Amino acid sequence: MAKKDVKTASSKGKKAPVAAKAKHRAVAKKSPAAHPKTTHAVHTAKAEEGPKTAPSTKEAKPAKKSAQLDLSKSPEYLFKTFNDTSEIPVSDKIVGQVIGQERAVEVIKKAANQRRHVFLIGEPGTGKSMLGLALAELLPKEKLVDIISFPNPNDENQPLIRTVHAGEGRELVAKARIQTSQVFKNQNILMFILAIIAMIAPWWVRSYYKSDIMFAAFFLGGMMFLAAFIIFINLGKRGSLGKGDSPPKVIVDNYKKEQAPFFDATGAHAGALLGDVLHDPFQSGGLGTPAHERVVAGMIHKAHKGVLFIDEIATLQPHTQQELLSCIQERKYSITGQSERSAGAMVRTEAVPTDFVLVAAGNLETIKNMHPALRSRIRGYGYEIYMNDTMKDSLENRWKIAVFVAQEIKKDEKIPPFSKDAVEDIIEEARRRANRKNHLTLRLRDLGGLIRAAGDLAQEKGDKLVRKEHVIGAKRIARSLEQQIADKFID
Ligand SMILES: Nc1ncnc2c1ncn2[C@@H]1O[C@H](COP(=O)(O)OP(=O)(O)OP(=O)(O)O)[C@@H](O)[C@H]1O
Ligand SMILES: [Mg+2]
Image 1: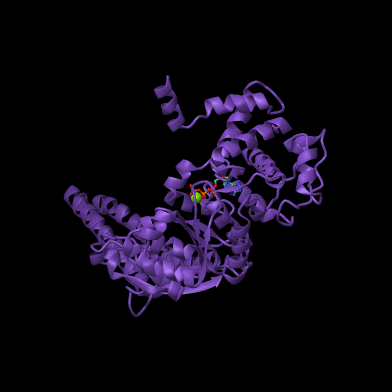
Image 2: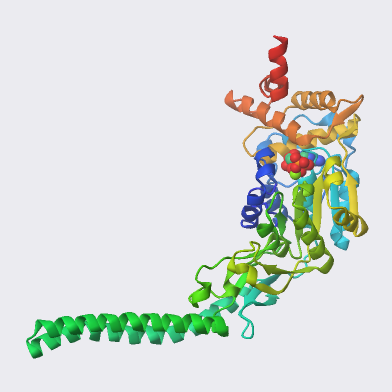
């Protein structure tokens, strides 16, 4: 989810990109349908959660012919009476879109209220990432902050860390910039004047002494003087920057974000997760960039007051898990260079706040391989949830699959609505994939793939409604790799 800015649910446009980097695995797997869109919609939504959302007139766009259903009626009644999915209103909140995971949804709501960590264990495509986004969306709108690193006049290698209200960080830095630039402006004017003198002087000397040798001497002398002057000024600039008058740097920027951030740190390397101090090859000559400007916040810092989501948490290096544990306990973590041989390793900032809610995801194998202390921490200060992978084949749950179809159509934005018999065929497929008598599968990402394939087929044919025949065609086309290989053997 999160992919578009997965990161994020957090910033309407920006957060996801950051998170996305870490997300290669998930990105590859996920459908383009993506939460980010959803997320975005969620932010702006006033609607109440759950499928009980009042039908919005906007949503009814594709359904000019058919009015939206009244969701206060029973699911059984709704399932029996609907004609096509354009009549089904879709919740604007992610938490209202999660299907078949009632217990998980309940726990996510509780975790959002109490700021508890959550560990989601379950099959792929059952909604774990979705629940993480839902949690970020539900987090109480605490005041977000910007985090800023300042030069430390007493110890250049220990930059100072301060927090200000979200949005104020940029202003503060802009003000500091103006002050320093004033000083340098005067120096620049001086340099300009000197440069002109150095240019004119040789010519004047030439006409006065009528000697080319004097010209050459003055010319070379002038150039050397200028070069020395520039080096001198730059040394002074660097020197003073390190000593405390260089402008601060915003390392966590929540400018114009009204919603709790969501960062997906799946597969992130240590630097991206824990923050880093960049290497500076000029460090020893005094020409380098001051330490506080080389500080880069990690996702644990950017997710401050929001959600840090980590799928397959056991794949993080044991050392990284250990550090993660310590920042969960302390709710703060100093940034230092991650590479031992870099100049950044000398630098260690004051503690930077990391008060996030951790949503860890994985399967049973993950539990075995993850750092035991980390798991016990999550268990002790949060919830563990085992995701459902099937649900009973009842009328009520069939209706949920119909709602799911409507949701996927809305997310996709391109495919036409499904007729009732097409939905019934999807339900039939959900029954088949459940591998359990009288149950429907909840591996909904895969089922979403079938919905999109059927939609594409209908669209190719120019049909305004996806019908049963499209779903049957899609089943044939969208066979999994394993099925295709099996087909080959049977042939
Ligand atoms: N319970 C659900 N309710 C509604 N939609 C779902 C549900 N589970 C999955 N989906 C659909 O499948 C997509 C992928 O789900 P999600 O990324 O949350 O799965 P996941 O459990 O995180 O999978 P993975 O373990 O592979 O990361 C969602 O964007 C959504 O469209
Ligand atoms: Mg996921």
